[in-house]
Image (cartoon, rainbow, N blue to C red; front, side):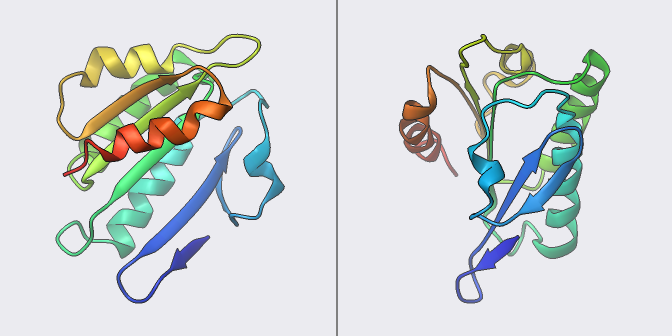
Length: 147
């Protein structure tokens, strides 16, 4: 769902298991902790398509926030994510943020993979989050880095 405030502000919320889909902010699925089988590139494809069709970078300040446990379906999908971030997202966004929330069963390697590739890029902000209660502080840190 994209929610607009006037003509100049919009929000979109998605959830991703195997395939990403847009959801309402009131969707109970936003409170899930773990589900497995995530293909992260499907969310990045949705984001890139939405931005390319509806939110030209010259007209919008675009901030992407992605939170997950860091598990991705496969290493091949990790490479697809790198390509999507590099070619379709970073050229169009003011800030790309990824927060990896540590779960009770540990977490995946997606954050480390992003850090290896994008560390030092001004409009990329990465965060390891100790638990759900620390997500808000992570968002404040992310926004301190925007352009």
